[in-house]
Image (cartoon, rainbow, N blue to C red):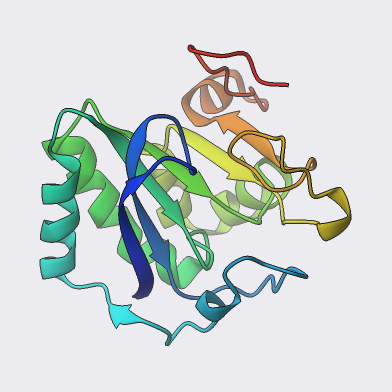
Length: 179
């Protein structure tokens, strides 16, 4: 897996101050995607053990709330295989940090109903995610007033609650109610 960028003080892609990893590779190709350069799976740099160590170090300060995975597309199977051991490590070494993931795939229709049925990696990866922002960016539904998403079709999903209840449970911000 390659990655396009690491942001060490990101406040746009989840609550609080976060470390964000932008993976390379996406097959969605959404119209007016903000990160088209990351569509190419070969773009950027290899995601090595040294890069993992660097991100873990960036996550350690108390003021960092968590890790966000974006892209590209973290839920592309080729990316899931490499992300799974990394998010396991994050949760083992830094259990107080939350993990958010942005995906163009729909949680209930594409990830649970298809990916999880076919791929053990997907089922396991989901167990380490706290919130999944799902749905492709749709230019016609773009809304800059929405928190943590670009278009109104996208949902902020509480992954642990959704897996427990067997249905989509939307994430509720403890600090501020979302529209």
